Length: 158
Image 1 (cartoon, rainbow, N blue to C red):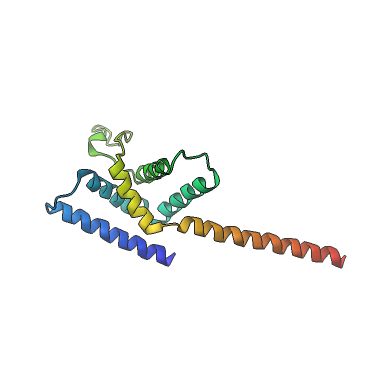
Image 2: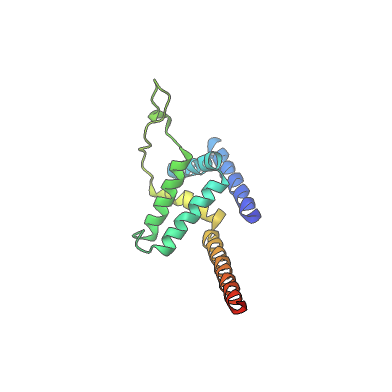
């Protein structure tokens, strides 16, 4: 988890640096800037643990339910949408002025925004979710095998 934390910190620094550069007047694609803003909202609002759990859950769904996502692009799109919705990155125009509560987030997620967020998140986590799952599965299998061996030994004693 320490390696993931260091990747997370590096990602936060890189996104913030690029957003600051954009704020100074550096020419940048509008959709890339929006993607970086979504990343910043994920960093600030969701946090490492919740983001990592969501990322791993989607990787698990993709790996073990092959019909869940039609294509790899749809997998990426739904993962980024889930992270964006967890970040509650609302457009200020979509806030009810009388109650102060945000309305439903209806802004579309464009491909360039999705690709930017995916690039940052896959750079941070990579394939760690599936590696973590396989390690946990191997550990669970070892525990099951140990229980079977213990039960066999108890039956042989009696």
